[in-house]
Length: 282
Image 1 (cartoon, rainbow, N blue to C red):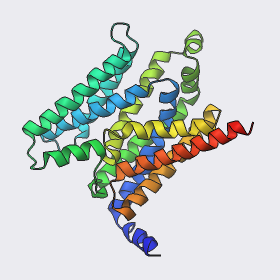
Image 2 (cartoon, rainbow, N blue to C red):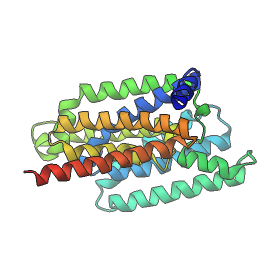
Image 3 (tube, one colour):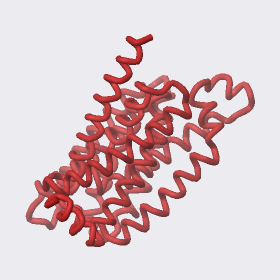
């Protein structure tokens, strides 16, 4: 009862509700497009863009912008386009491009924050950016509205282009032969993932975003076989883990991002066992 009373008390504060809503929306969007990334073997894009977002946030901090979205979002989207092109290039392989951009972004970001930062706690700022803020007090009403609007756009794009995304994901060659511009839809996926990563930075930090995108998809693939089933299961797992992670972080006073990711890891373990039992029973 004491834990329940504590939880009810916390949810009487607006900032807790903001964090909860943002966590659910970001997790839902991440899960839907995470399935596409895993199936198309584009997982490296999500990991690389998270590092790019860190570097862009460092630039915004050095410039002194109060709204770092004005810098972080355009840079991350442009990087998503460049990474997609690099992955299709014969001169620079995708894994080499991602390694180059990831390490470079982290190094430049940390260097800028160390040299030009006006904060006395540079290590704390870097840790918060990489792993998410320890406190959910950092999410404002503006963050909530930005996340709400962009999440609606992301979900609308997924629903509107569901059939074409499905086609390009499973058989890109056939899609091209049927007259579908696969390049455009690959680009759409990359840009949307960039938007999701920017949204998720305030919750889980730049280093943990790829886990939020990939774990629910991998978990659902252990227990579901159809694309629609995997997408729905991934969305459910991701939202449940986000809720459990946020609530646990409140009750246990742990960082929100790592707690949510740990919930995703546990869910993957459960799905892995269930999938293995299902195969043995056949």
